[in-house]
Length: 80
Image (cartoon, rainbow, N blue to C red; front, side, top):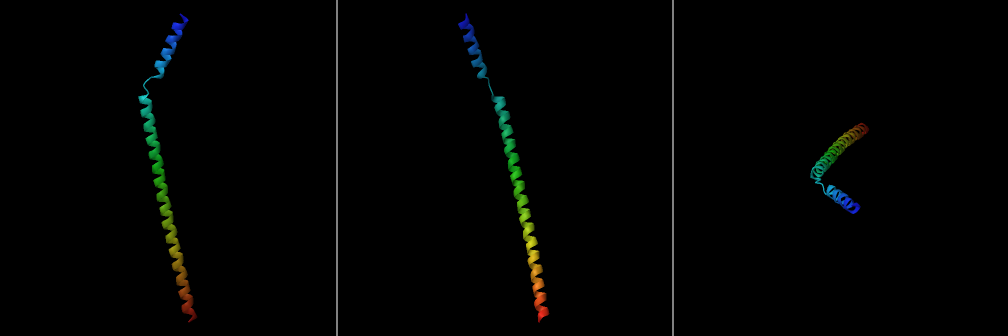
């Protein structure tokens, strides 16, 4: 009788382990897609920020260079 009870218990556990996990898998897939989308969005935002910073730095450098050139021209003209 113990063998039968043990066999039934093992079979019941085996069947429980074969439970359909499709809903859990689908939720996991949705979460993964959302996390990847968030990561892609963050990466794109960082790229835009970096591009804006580079543009601002280039503009600042151009202004400094222009100011230095104007100062040099003024000094040269005054020396003449």
